[in-house]
Length: 59
Image (tube, rainbow, N blue to C red; front, side):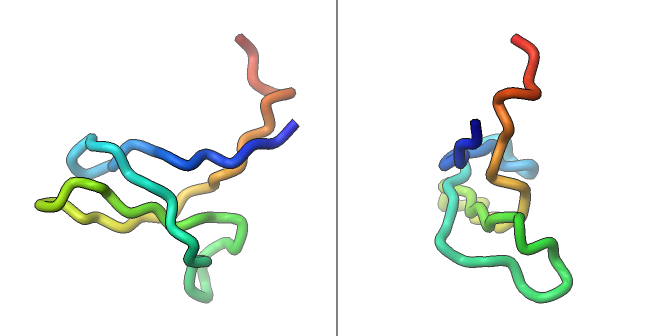
């Protein structure tokens, strides 16, 4: 089973980051998704895989 993670943690300030609709630029793995930090003073944009395979994750 796969699911897309809509929220993540900003690697810079640790605040909540939300997924955007943008695909990564060329040279970055297209399976990655763009996340933007929701903190107005931070606003970091970063890329990470949004899909997790829950069958491989041990509880």
